[in-house]
Amino acid sequence: MRALKAIIRYLLRILLTPFRYLFKRRNGVCASVVRHELPNDAFLGLVSEKLAEGHTAVIWVKGYSMRPFIEFGRDKVKLASAPTYQVGDAVLAEIEAGHYVLHRIIDKEGDKLTLQGDGNVRGVEYCTTSNVKGVVIEYIRPKRTLSADDPGLKRNIRIWRTLRPIRRYLLFIYKAVV
Amino acid sequence: MKINEGFELRTVCGENVIVAYGRKNIDFSKVISLNESAAYLWNAVIGKEFTCQDLADLLCKEYEVDAQTALNDVIQMVDSWKEVGLVSD
Image (cartoon, rainbow over all chains, first blue to last red; front, side):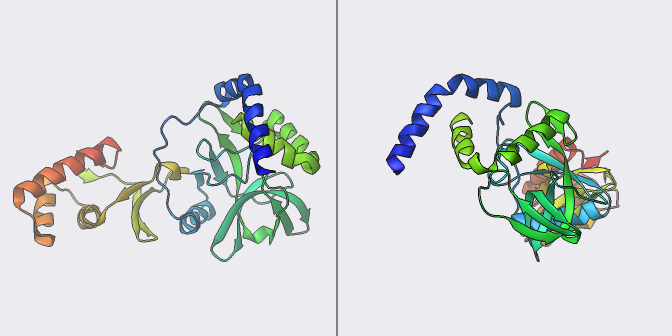
């Protein structure tokens, strides 16, 4: 099964080479990965503190859980605190004391929120609006910066949500492209 | 020279990092980290006028290092601080 998967991925990579080229030309690649990585949680504590003081903050994003909208090693995001948060917002939330995630709100009931990474197939996190420290207001890629209000981006995020049942397969193809 | 206003030295997980405050946006993707001796010098001269020689003297007082090496190191450090806008003449 694993070998079969590898073969399919290899074939897909060859097949999707033109798309890969287009994708990289559109979003850019991170030429030199010179960056300062502090242990995530302590660092994000400092970020949340500054957000609460009214600053906006630009951070590198760690991990692959927000694929395909945020790519690890390539993208940064700009965060700001907001009075309210909506379904569809990507937020920095402290889901347990001292433990942070940057995931998207997929459900909201009163002040109870359900979060899920765009690149996650199953796992979700639960928290309340008081756990949310900031919302992504800009997606910063090497070649272009997208506002979170960008209509095209919002549409893509909505489409991605409706495709959740086949997300696993789409991510498989996406991995062959990036 | 003097350390420019708007920077704060913080310790996060045992690391000394410089955070720019007072600005609307803080770029954490370009956080500057200082080693122990640089952080010591930073704390010693923050808010004061100083010269490279002052920093070298401080280094010699705290660490076992000869004056010339200290001065060379300090000049190099101050150059990199100037490059990123932490200090100005």
